[in-house]
Image (cartoon, rainbow, N blue to C red):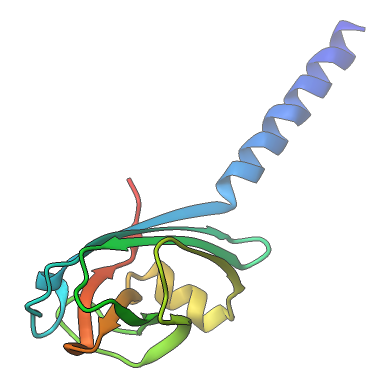
Length: 141
């Protein structure tokens, strides 16, 4: 009886460890200074994302404030490190309002780019069509 209980406890711990190991969290602080070149926007924001490495589903939450005029679009861009620009990978919406929540299924190449720190969140408006605020998505500590 004791042996069976220990065996079940061992399986439960192993399962819990495997399940938690399948999630990678990312964070970005969005600012005008992170744009390349830096913008003159007064906006700011945050992005948090979780990647399930088993299902390859990325869940994300993006918040922003202080943009004047308001945001006209938001998207994930890449692949590019901080200080370089890249094309749109995925739109987060036209004329978005904060907060933005969503999920998407990533291809293997996209997952590799994201986990390598080569994706960023970009929010644009009329006065900053290349980007008002930006933040590099990096593994959260």
